[in-house]
Length: 270
Image 1 (tube, rainbow, N blue to C red):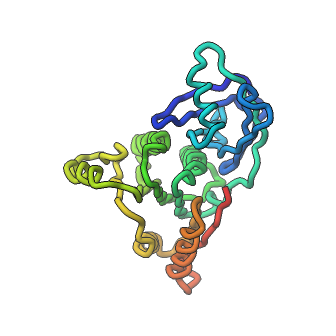
Image 2: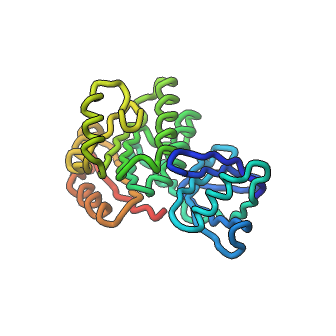
């Protein structure tokens, strides 16, 4: 790949956007990346954060070890000539299943939120273009993280989707809930003081951040009540313990009556 377009996000997250040139991708896939300037032999996997509908493909890299630190430093310091990047892939099964459900519940925990960047963007493109292959009418997105700092880029993506949906009168296509699982009293006090503001104090988004973990029973009950006759696909990218509780909730909240709501758990291995 020739010199990619580089975007530095807050909390030292590096976004690389690369021209497609014969590169074909699906949602939920990943690539291996090599930077010869750092090491000829080291290849690292990264989830694609662009949608197939976009004219570039992108990854977001956060500092999580020597190689990523080195890569971010290299790109930060290069003003004239960008280092060359080599790419192998894409790999992995596409998460196309998401598009097969009328209602989808997407759960991303921590860095597991990354594949949903591609999925949410692609869903929105398909929805806007009235794509006949898209059965989805409603998305519920749950984002669990300790601190939003490292994911400010994802926040920006949600904000732009929120704006685009509102502008085209489709604001209710996506309902999302952010759960901050690691927080301290200073954050809590700040939020309490500004509780009446239109946007959230932590994220700047219209939906308020919830402190603590989701009560899955009530989340599933609410979705079941809103869609009493739908088949709901539940997708997770996160830890195994969370998979167990979601599976249990799917089972508990599915009706035995075939005409009524059913929840199907899809353990996605992104």
